[in-house]
Length: 632
Image 1 (cartoon, rainbow, N blue to C red):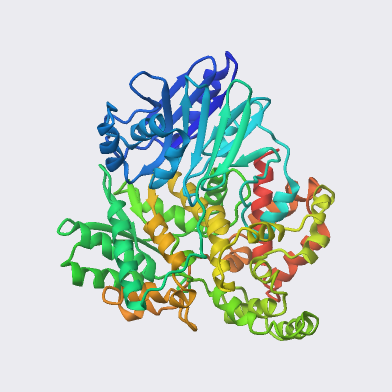
Image 2 (image 1 turned 180 degrees about the horizontal axis):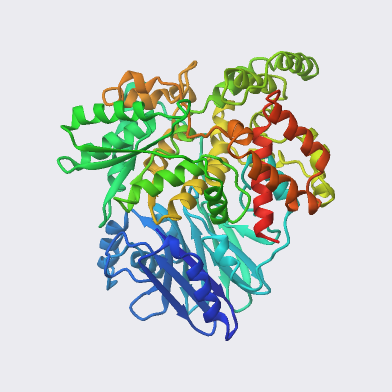
């Protein structure tokens, strides 16, 4: 894993080299092993390297034989060896053993069509000196980030906001509509960012720039199609799921550095850890678990059970390491949020960072279980959507007040509580089918925004954050209403929240994380399966459980998903109370006119009294306030 940066069409700017060096240095944590730059009168390319493959020969930027095509790449190309053999057969000569050099020659042979041939996680920039063109590309599911902005005909790109901000032309005007989206979703959906004229290249997209005239074109090169269903007996389909997931794990063992695996004790991580230990046996595989003193969030006993089970069928090939951590560290929160560069409020970034830091003590690469919930219908909210669809026979005008009344009968004990889940379910039942999924996810309803938003955000009240859902819905292909939720998550929630969380939190400590469940073959095969193979009745990830029934104990297969959370509600009333209060009320949130003091005070006091749980709204506002403090 690495960090990339570039300035295209800098027009022989004498400051380009200095700016590029600063951009590279800002991303040093992403690539602590090496640094490289290329500079001519038109293009400046920078690279920070975390050495994974060909440790001594992988310096970037890297060029072809006649130095006319060069690349800076962040990520891994899992099929690079096969591609290299084909390219050598066509006469291409290689100087290193890296996957990045393969992409250079593949581009030389196939131009931008080369991207569709790549199997991996990546974000890269290719410079064609002869044609005076630059190609930016991002992997199919958005595992690796790529940010950019244009100033005139100059294109500036990087892996993280901290690098972009080293360029003096970096746009600083905040996008209030994006802030509103963040308060609803806890992340800002692609292609938008918190800055009005800074963009994320969407997953599975290419950006091509003609240096001669500054013309930019952006297009998609891949789209997941849920409409192409195939008829397979369930047992046969489960066997294929097992084969493809095992193949995906095997691909991700490609490395010249130590590899390990995250082990939470849940179904997904147990599958990945078990397969990794089996494939590497008799060599030992290191598995990493963190635990918390708060028993509601501590699953060390589950992880220990999983490790014991794995060692039973692999002959003791798994070494299990545990560490008790305390995520309740406000300065750590401030430090980590700075890495994200824009408001981002998935609280599990804290334990993800601590787990990554723990694993980095022994390994450079770690496999994780991310993506299985989206690919195999694992979230409880999918089940809620299925139940909610059954009441659509009744008009919304009748349903909404009825379920609103039922909600008032339940105490607001937080989203993780049983009553909290019922409250969310009732909200879904009372919604129209078109708005239901958004309302299920929305952390800050329009009614709350109308009272909270100050003068600076007043214009965003005309913006409907649900439009993100509406825009994606027109592109959806899934025939099943619940399956459409998975499709939406794969396009927005996964790259915007989950993968962003993992990339930033792990790269902050120089750890590369790979996700077998997000392998292209696995994802495409799962999309072709009937939804009832994935979620029949109440069983979620049903076919995944069946595929690995012999490997994963029943107690783990059917254990309720807990997630990687932290006790936000309690911390905002306890350990974080004072720093949170100061940040919310004494910072730019109120003084800058973003949020009105009176309704915020009402939320704060109600939460502190224990009468209501407003932890999600307060947490989102806390993150926003910390962002504003860094961007004065």
